[in-house]
Image (cartoon, rainbow, N blue to C red; front, side):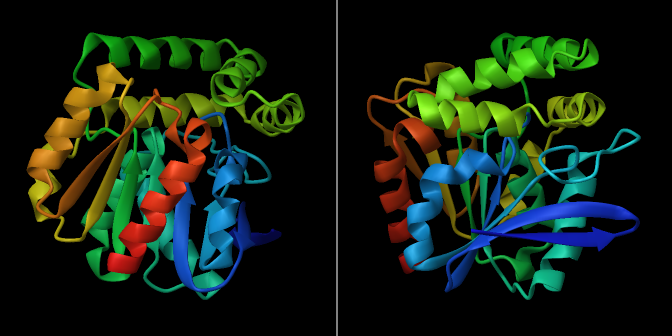
Length: 256
């Protein structure tokens, strides 16, 4: 995997690129960074994976002021051409799926389709509100090391990979993380979902029951959505069910 540093508007953005073929832009969840998609690297045998570190993650510059999900989508859209990438599939995990949705809404002619994993178009239940409130509070209290260890332990069982995940996640800037959680918490695009005419794959863990009403909402409102429930898996589909999820991605992109 090659790391490319792109500079724009006085900021540095780190992209990790591997493979050749149809491009797949992968957008990570907060307080993880590009290592979020380490188990998707097997897709690089057929596809070109482009995995950015969002602002304040990995080697990407932090953000000094609040921003919106729309601004993140716009920034990615402006950066992608500098990498020589055209019309990627957009894969977003958890809150990263919100960024993927906004990208598809704003730039439908610049995307092949979307893959949303454990995603949501708004926060409308007490459980997810609570998760956001807790994460925002910890980020304001400079609790990045605690969040990094907690998130890593819920995703990874291999001790060596846990060390790598924790190290990368711990590089997250606390102020940027606070802004990212706040942006994700207030994001709402449900009423605009009908405007997305791109093919969309929705992937959720069968055991992630608290997210199932979001899955159903997206499935009903997205005109070209295909919903897949992955057995014996909770929220952490991309790591805990990587082989099954990766095969779903291959099939979806081949058909798309």
